[in-house]
Length: 112
Image (cartoon, rainbow, N blue to C red; front, side, top):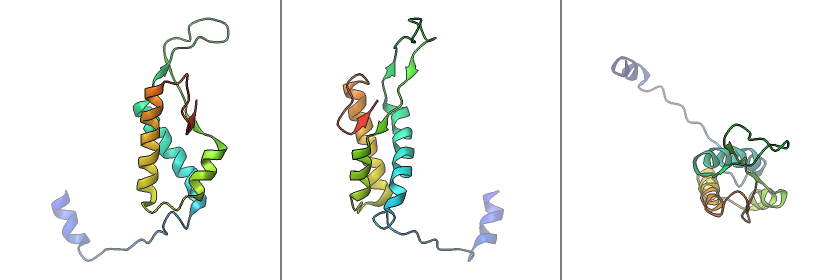
């Protein structure tokens, strides 16, 4: 239980330093993919398109969003003063806006 473990951990702290996101721009695509995937699962509309053969695909299918190459370059070039929390917020907002416009009309940031 926590009551037993916490006293044993007292004084056993470690500091983990992580460079700001502006210094690790190579991490932006992976983080963006993760945050976009998480946000899109919460906010996306569902595609009800038929399969190639014209048959129902067995129910609605989720639409998988992605970032265009130009958007990925812009995200990497930005300084991210708010670090990954700011990146997450930007992608969350983009997912909300994308869901509002529907999967059939991709927004300026995302492509379906």
